[in-house]
Structures are given as C-alpha cells and as structure tokens.
Image 1: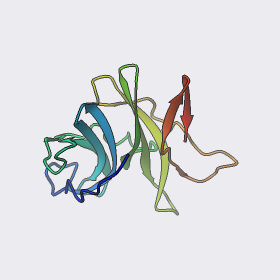
Image 2: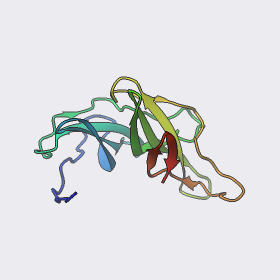
Image 3: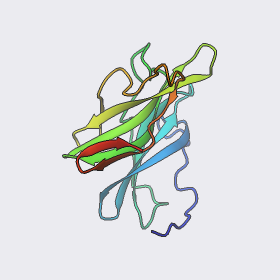
Length: 164
C-alpha cells in the first residue's frame, strides 16, 4: 500500500468540552467502503484525555463529516487506572463487536503518570463503548514492574488473539 501524506485534517478548537485541545493518537476504523471513523484522544480544560471520533470520506479527509458531541469513552471512576484520562491505541472488529484497546492515565506520586492498557467494547457499531473491566487488562508484574504497559497492536490469527 502506498501512503500519501495529507497533512492536518482535524484541529480541536474547543468544539465540545471534551475536545478543547489535542487530537492525539488517532486510530482509524473502516466503517464501509470509503467511510472511516477515526477515534482519538482530546483534552478538556483540565488537561484530561477522553476518546471521541471524527468521521470522514477517505477520498476527502479534510472534510469532517461528523465530530462526536460526547466522548465514546470517558474518564474512569475515581481511583481506577484511568481516572485521569483515556487514549486509544488499537481497534479490532470481531463478531459484530468493536474492541477498543486504550491506555488509562492515572496521576503518579513521583512519576508524571501511570499508563496501562484497558479494553472497552462496543455493540452499537462504535458509537458507544463500555469498559470490559474497571481494572487494566495488563498490569505490572515482578518482571515488568513499571507503569507504562501499553498495547499497540492486536492480531487475530487462526482464532488466536495476539498482542504485537
């Protein structure tokens, strides 16, 4: 596949309270034909990240067809691994569901933030997502004790799910 650089296609300018600044970590999901939904992390006035999306025709990506009015995945409950923000990393379409992998932001005491991976699932075509768990799906271990454990790619090969 040949890639063609298109430049900036979306700039957050406070269109909604969840997207005052930042359009970071885009994850594209082909909905059908040339229609794509691009999930990304926007930041609110308190600099906390939430996941929402834009919709585009891939042939005219600079023409935004839709910007979600509300985030599809909001902050986690106070004290959870994602109570200070969520950012998308990957999406998998499987059995009429969308599996959105994301990392949660949690303020650290001596480090700026802890980042570990979570999973949210959509059964309505990606318009809304519900957390699989209030806990991360991958967390620290004795051999990997640090709090930056972010899933970047999931593949399904012969029915086996694999983190890449």
